[in-house]
Length: 364
Image 1 (cartoon, one colour):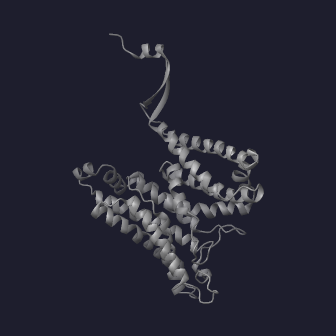
Image 2: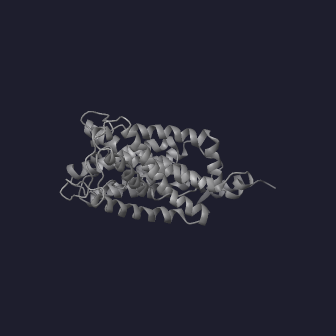
Image 3: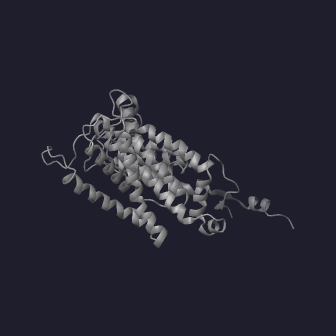
């Protein structure tokens, strides 16, 4: 009897992750087209507004680069932990704490034109994100607490801390009671990359981190130990590797990267600390890391794609009247379709006929 069967792949192509990601993007476009029809918009116009319109102007390209920077930073940090089975879901909170720490430096030294101010903010933001992730690392390493729940709940704590600070101790005294800090001086902000846009030099930090991540994952002994310690603690212990060190290293790296993303926001397009310091980059970074196959190079392309979706959603809102929720829907579809297609990395579907079975069964 002829039938479809699912079987393990005898070998895995190096291009398989790329093919799965492209298939997920293709299915997302199909799903998006159906969504456009429901809203009474031509699928071609909808897809053109999201994926093509932002690339037609310098402003649109600048906005893509602007949003790509935090997504790239967060995803590269998370991917290192994910490869070691350390699931940091709280990058949003670590971004917020990093933004708070960097803003504290900018506020404390307001008016100072020292070239060391911005580097000091970068260091403070990175340390802030690492300390916030370190709470989850301590609880996981010492008490085996689930880092998914801990990091997720710490995000809510970080958000409430942000609300308290911008409405109280860090509020601009001359800001008419708006919940925001003072505007930062030019020495406390990143320089602009492209004139006439908001894209800034924080993108360079993301690209440098991507190169470091590639070396760390593929060429360093520390990266190998961390992966083994996270995936197979018993084997790591037998080999003399510490699973606790893997937990600490993974969470501190991802927390520090998220903190840097927070610095990029307050020292970039915002130029101050405010309640809406992030439009959800910490959660979108999870999708970017997964869509990029947890590979540093793949994550660069995935970050660019997700940034395009962010900007394209705004363009679609203005040009064809699609609701702002389209961006979130596209992100959800990307993740859902990637997870649905990911089994193709290790499995394949075959059409089996009686003749096929007869050829594969060895004669006695």
